[in-house]
Image 1 (cartoon, protein in one colour):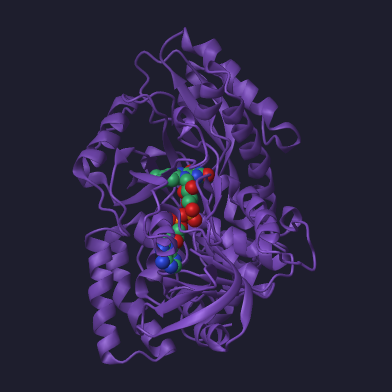
Image 2: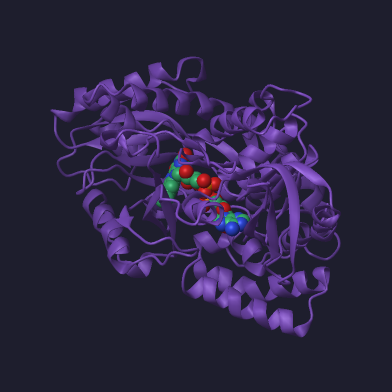
Length: 538
Ligand SMILES: Cc1cc2nc3c(=O)[nH]c(=O)nc-3n(C[C@H](O)[C@H](O)[C@H](O)COP(=O)(O)OP(=O)(O)OC[C@H]3O[C@@H](n4cnc5c(N)ncnc54)[C@H](O)[C@@H]3O)c2cc1C
């Protein structure tokens, strides 16, 4: 464990079975699948785990109600199977990452009588499709019941509501936990190391050139197979393999804004079934705040996409339309943007080019690319990818079949939903801190609690349950290498409240500098980088 040790393992000249490029949902999922089958795996992430799209999602574990509508309207079997797979995977994620996920009820407000039977029937069908993995039954709500469930909702013209259930999860900690669980099964994982080139022998991909993004050092790593799981960046890696490769990715951005908790009760989300551009929009309770998203605007591939004013206005316009509460830009506590990778299947006929499922592509020289899908189906994507890689690269795995269906994610195995009470009794934490630590770290929470006894018990920001001890833990055990790794991904504060994150940043820097032995130059660089991320784009 620890970055230096991991880097040593990547430099000792050994050949790995697989190099997996990209530490988002896809890459971390593939690393866990391959490592639990007993393969020798290296997971390489250029920035931080889930610093790309995977840390900026709506944080829903879902089959996709909108996809189901399209499946039915167009009698589309592919779409239908995607929803079915999504609902199956939803059940597994809620079981295997119990501390990081929860069931959530949604109110769908209906303002036209005509919509009531249509939406109700659709959501009932959604329940039926989840089969054994059903997590609750949809039902009709009277106007009064809908307003009781979601008090901020605009009452004027409201006819009824439909209640249904889906899952919610903490995406950034999920990716990290997948990577750390893979590490427990022998994978060598590293963040802040980029694949800067591919290595070939006799015309076949036989490894990768790695560049440490922090030190600039470059070296080569050999492997029997290389998997490109870089989301919106897959074409960049494909170009390293074949300079004239045609693109398979187009991108659009989706932003989210965070509002005060007044906009979402703690136990219910709102699903707005049709936005002005014909999509669905969600308002969700998240970490004692309200999360609103998302948008869909064409965009270029970039590492830290900038949320645009027009996107923020779009979300606020919908909130104004559906709520009795006044809202303006000054109510927005944080905003972030993620890139949606839309994949076209290079093998599909022209008419069906846009893939709705994930795509696995083998290049002539043996680079395997996996792209598309969604967070909810990361495990299924990983399974398909590793099955494919075993054949493609002639690998023999000690356990040839997928092991992840029953694999608890780090923190989940002995998670106790009521563990916060033990933390309060033993460490005298405030109830909000105990509840946060318990659901964030699961059965590892006590390790953070122990660190508070070393003089790191203070909160990092007023009105937020995040503690100094978490910074120490993140730097010591969770491969946090930058201040923003802690503020945006080990804990959710930068995604919830930009001002609070700015206030917390100097203390986070101080603790990390001491723990990781940073000199003044590194501290100055970190201050600049953190400021940029918190003022421009996360
Ligand atoms: C706005 C939005 C909301 C969404 N909401 C949901 C949701 O609620 N539920 C759901 O199921 N799905 C959701 N999705 C979809 C889901 O987030 C994505 O499908 C998923 O996160 C993609 O993961 P990925 O690993 O393929 O890509 P990424 O998360 O982008 O990971 C790719 C990684 O590769 C790294 N990388 C790039 N180049 C290199 C290199 N040269 N060397 C090393 N590493 C490299 C990047 O730094 C990045 O971390 C949403 C998507 C968007 C855009």
